[in-house]
Length: 443
Image (tube, rainbow, N blue to C red; front, side, top):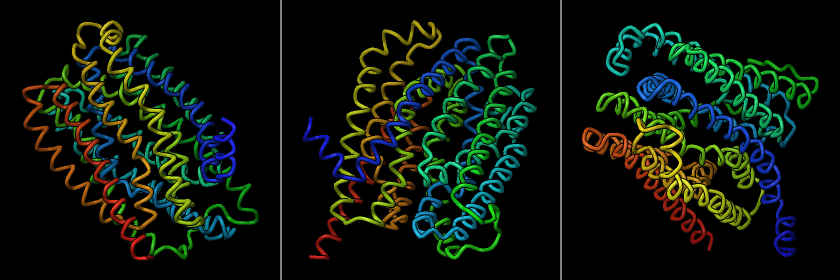
């Protein structure tokens, strides 16, 4: 144990990763508990059909967001690393202003798309034409969700403000319980739950914006916080933005089309069972998010600052750490879920434990190989990310139309878990090939 502690202390990258992610992990456990309580209680209170409609509305909004999103949180990590290290305050302010504006514009465009197609969504996906107004109402949350997922979060991470991010995640989870589960408890039904979801997103975005302004005032002394002048890295960033946009679009098509297509191919009840199983399996992802938020900038900064040997060592250590964290939860879902979940959700959710188990396996592989995406971005190999993304979309779509009509939620879960395994192993093999080529070239 003493040797292990000494090894961690001697490795600045690993010690920083563990220290910062430990803060995020502690808060992540609590916020994950809050979100899990909210999801299970809401599903039980409004039933599988309405929960399936809720998942369809939110999933359709997320799909549009992911198609329009220009991935500012990834781009910002790359563009902010050097000016922050060089204390170039003006460039930092210009990058943050540019990418924040991009998030706002992308959010408004996404909201407009969902608003225009609200009628067909209500008729064909929700199978409830009278809920068209509710789909349009949900568009109010989309710009705020885009802001929460974008550069506001990245700027806090780049300045190591993980305590603030932890407080935000707990407050957001509490808001969802209060507003969404509270609406269901009051008997306000699907309409009340969606309104609660909208208010939760507004609260989450406003908290992040206030935090970002406070940190920028401290870290950018004597500099205007809003600077619309073009950053020096504008053209480089614009080129990367195009590649990352394609990558994000492919990722959105691969993940967020599941619920809308499943709604077309099956019934709202099957969608509700799938969504419930996905919510449970996503507890693994939620536990990984604290480490992902720290690992992404850590990988990029490690590639910029340290030797290639240290970079490779950090990747191996992070993979081992993620495996240790995810496997116990996955095994618990597989072996205990069948006993607990039917009692929690009721007889209408038959098969939800199988759904959760399939998807949990996919999240475990994703966790162990979570470093592959930031590593390939650090190597500027976005083209390889897009090739894998295209392959995954094609495989996922063909399998979903083939299996979902017959096997319903279980078939969808097998596909979702399977493509996650394929995608992450493929990225890992690509990185290994590039890494070995670089090593051989240097030799």
